[in-house]
Length: 110
Image (cartoon, helix red, strand yellow):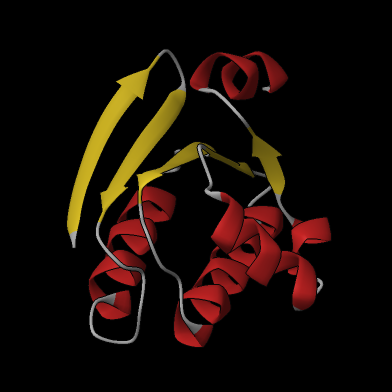
């Protein structure tokens, strides 16, 4: 899993590249702990290069969205492929995420 961080005004863009699964969820978790510790409250996660999310990845995303909520922050997702969205819908977690088709739409939502 490759993780790229970019700052756009007061928003942190996190671009993930690879499967979000049990093998790499620890590294992603540590990245988001660092973001929260630095008090960056607005985060956009780009899923353009994420082909697969397993149950530990979903659990991690739930943990992250809850952490941002407790910190009065906001997390959005963009470029989520249809396969992953269908998994989100089956597990009913899609209601907990703000999901956008593009960076631009997500950035405007902040």
